[in-house]
Length: 244
Image (cartoon, rainbow, N blue to C red; front, side):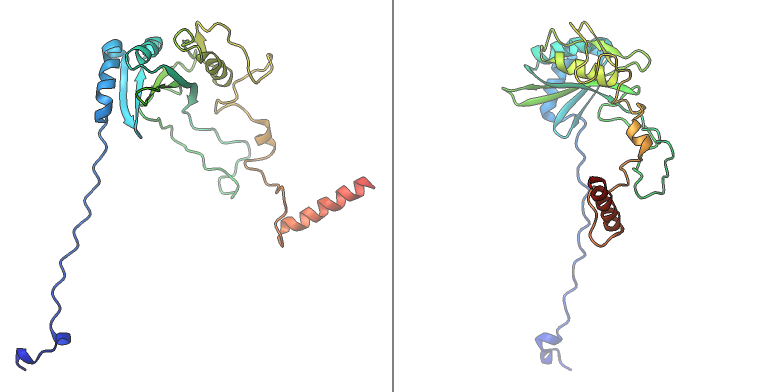
């Protein structure tokens, strides 16, 4: 058949061009351009006491040696004009031990990491203290962190640089057991004075979890049409009988 007799429907379709392969997204640089100058100012004051730095989700995260923690506060306030202390706290990087009678196959059992991992700028051990400082004029935020010894966790107080550190350091001492050298009065905020232990350490025994595995097997409100409804009815009857 002559080519002229081909209808539009009979014309061979043009070969489709292969779809371009998706290009991999560019990796974020370790230090964002807007953080380079900030880091240089801190480096000028801290020298080799500045252990590691990284940009993380738009913030500059800087890890310093324990003996330079106070100097880091001074540098952040004077060099970066970070006049506002958002908070100081601690962190226990260790993986949480399995609770007693823990069944990993039970649907109510939590997923616990088995390997210890560290956050941005790393860590040399189990415990760290970290702080967030901000410049309200320049709209910048810096996260400073330092390692503390597991056997003797302590670090310098920031109360003479940021008076608001008083309450935060007391809470960190109470919950993690980190002593802040030079703090005017480390004393309990939440717990009784005779309380022993530090509740935010991952090895602190929680009696409620030894009695009832996380997250607990008792429903607060029975589900309609389920086994819980029968249990709820029995509970209601028991309450009613007790009230008579």
